[in-house]
Image (cartoon, rainbow, N blue to C red):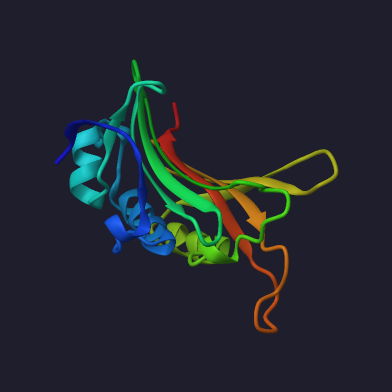
Length: 175
């Protein structure tokens, strides 16, 4: 399912099934199923997730990305392999991240991701900075590590409290 075509940013209309939330859910299902990163290849990631990964020569990775012009958000997944190191990463990015609420891409928040991973047998810990603010959440099971970098919604939506969203989710080996 991988292609020799080179990577380019897609529009949401090209992949209507790959919404920001659906991509996060597929990444979490991939993490749930993995026992080891030895199972992970660009072909297996494409097969298990349905992500249209294409080779991105500038980054020497396989990737796909979708741009949401109405909100100026984009999101995508990269598969990287360098020697024995392998990683699959989902990242949400905005043209002006300092001013943007993550609401348009926060369909799966940190609480939901944490519940899914803990339900799959991952243990979790919080990494914090020098003033005690969480900088990342690290989940580990067997030889697989899932790292989540949170970002808060900048404002509550429809009277609900602001959630802690996923800015980045990386699946890699614990080695």
